[in-house]
Image (tube, rainbow, N blue to C red; front, side):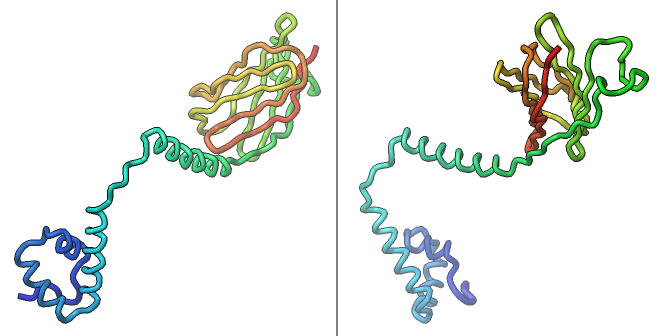
Length: 200
């Protein structure tokens, strides 16, 4: 019975080199190897590698070094992935301070200022409310999905961060008056309101 129609499979050659091949495979391979110089050369190389591996006395690298190298490559991968981040700058499309009271949302019931920003398919509805000498920025990101998202307010007088809830709503901790930038970060998207001035 002829087991090898063209060449001996690599797995079988490896078994032959290690001495792990079954008797029928050894017998069939012996006949094939006398007529096939390609398989014979491959087997010879494998036997040389196996012999070299048996004489190898090198030691494994220290565990801490292996961990460092693995982390280094993971960091590079994360940096490459973060470069795919899509950054958008939002533009102001509505401000309740510049709209007639009849059109301002909740204008008669609240001293909160409403601002609406847009960036492609993303809208950010902001409510800015004074509290003593501080300002509270709250709102909602109007989009289909915001799982794991957060909002960050940063400026020279300080910064604040808040997660987005299931309805994409957020309320930032009170901050002092000043000029801030607001960033909404969701997965691979970052929407920025570059200039948000909080003042009386």
